[in-house]
Amino acid sequence: MLHFSRLKTTAILVITAIGILFALPNLLPPAALAVLPSWLASSRVTLGLDLQGGSHILLEVDGAALRKERAEQIRDEVRNVLREQRIGYSGLTIRDTAIQLRLRDPNDTTKAVAELRKLAAPITNTLLGGSTGEMDLTVSSASEGAVTVTLTDAGLTARIRSAVDQSIEIIRRRIDQLGTVEPNIQRQGADRILVQVPGLQDPQRLKALLGQTAKLSFRMVDQSMSPQQALEGRPPPDSEVLQGQDGIPYLVEKQVRVSGEDLVDAQPGFDQNTRQPIVTFRFNSNGARRFAATTQAAVGQPFAIVLDNQVISAPRINEPILGGSGQISGSFTVQQANDLAILLRAGALPAPLKVVEERTVGPSLGQDSIEAGKLAAFVAAGLVAVFMVAVYGLFGLFALVALAVHVTLMFALQSVLGATLTLPGIAGVVLTIGMAVDSNVVIFERIRDEAREGRSAIAAIDKG
Image (cartoon, rainbow, N blue to C red; front, side):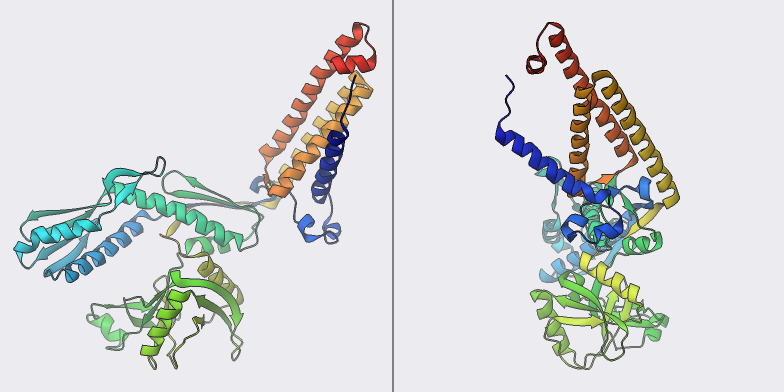
């Protein structure tokens, strides 16, 4: 005899009610959504790029820039090691992926090679974990006094792979702060990243946000000579000439006093005196300590704020800044200040990204896809309903109710998870309807077989 426990019946009813509650916002107009609680109104299925339009961008990590930056980093580390060991050298130069130098005393060759080899790091296997047995650089000496530090291909490949992984997370943080829902960000190949943002109709702003490395640094302005003299002659070895936003050149020290990596927050705002857009920032404890020490020692001197090798502003330090916070002003518009704050909060990209492919899906194409998908779903559901009721009568009606609950729960789960519904997803819904009905057909045919053997309706259902 058929028997359903009260607990099971209650659980089915409660789950169905919750499913209807979370699926309902997908059917309501914006005016009705405004009345609902925010936690419920926000639980809607997000339409994919092919349904509502948006931006599609394929980015590529700039391997050449990454190699150059890595070579410069190793060159600086080589210089520091040799200075610490009091080993004299000359001609420290970079040639592609090799750093070459000549020791003043050839007898220091063995010691120098041994110390420089300590800079090498093992390459980690990202799939299996542990070391691959290869190193990211090699140190050799072709002749007495001549030392070459070479970046290995395996090391550069691992660095590019790591840069892609870091870039994906940083890109996700940047796009999330635009307020868009469920961007599709994934790796393509060894050095490319695919970014799809449904609903974003300003691809130029997206390109600006993703294409900017956003490496922020605070450096002292070198006042030993004018920028024009440095451009015409030879700048000091520890300084370089950088262009400002207004086109004015600045001679700034290469030494980074405080890095953007020490920022914990950045927010757009307005200057209380000029009412011009600015960006306020706050350092962590380490950055605040270094910022305070730098401003204490440099009162009265100009301090350059550098973003991606461009001087945003170079204010003069009037008094020590001890609170660990400050502001950046640079003739920003409101949107520029907001975008800069987004970039600083999300962090700097490990390497520049180049736009390889850009495509914008218009909302008209998306609307056509939506209408075609709706038509396909409604036609499929209608044909299934007619077939089930015509062939199985009351049992078919029961099956349709169960099917409606099934589809409702499916959309409710997608709404809660914030999943993206694409055109293939609509096809999947139609396929799910067909498979669910197919299961019911098998069950009902089995019940019919039992009924033909003379069993009552209840007994046939129980047995079938």
